[in-house]
Amino acid sequence: MKIALDIDGVLADFVTPFLQLLERRVGGPAIDPASITDPNFQHHPYLTKELIYDCMVDASYDPEFWRVLAPLPSPEQWQALNRLSRDNEVVFITHRWVRDTYDINQVTCDWLRGHGMDNPVVHFTQEVKSQLVRQLEVELFVDDRHENCEDVATQTDAVVMMPHRPYNQRFAHPKVQRIEDLNELFSYLNPNSVLSVPSIVKPS
Ligand SMILES: [Mg+2]
Image 1: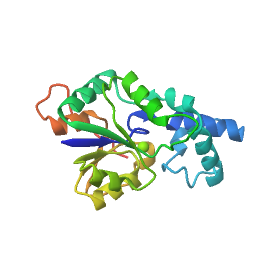
Image 2: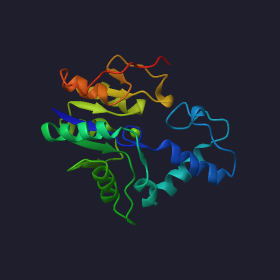
Image 3: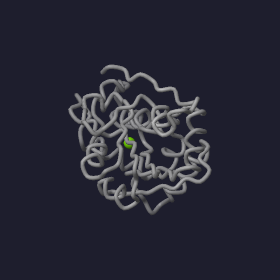
Image 4: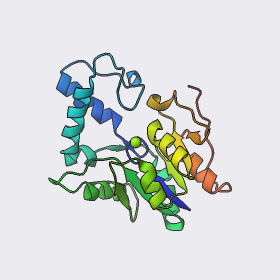
């Protein structure tokens, strides 16, 4: 089965360092991650669209920002994901911006290798992700942004899983399966696996 995973918010903690970038730019107090209730940081008391865009641009030109992102899965989950990539075709689909000042594909692949993926394949796109999902004939798609999940769920036949995050908790779609973590992906693919103990999704 061909599987595609998003990186930021699924495998990498993007929100924490991005909030630190915003804090530095605003020069204000620490931003409570709980105040981020949607992935576009909209409807926030003082974070404006322009501010967020400027910080996104800064991050996009800074290879170090992406190199030091903390991993979200446990070491055991990385091992399981790597094992899965041997039996299935696992690819990564990201909206990270490509800049000509450095090779974001290299930085991203090095980061994935550093966490145990033997042979990562990353696709970068600025289009809706359903395009690549269709092109690559992906059958299972994992993303933390509800817009991407909705797009792929409505535009393709892929099974869609959305890890539970503070900024996606209000979203519900009949074709999008909310998961607590990657163990639920592993148990879906291999119900008899010892490693894959399904966890309980916390009520929002
Ligand atoms: Mg994401």
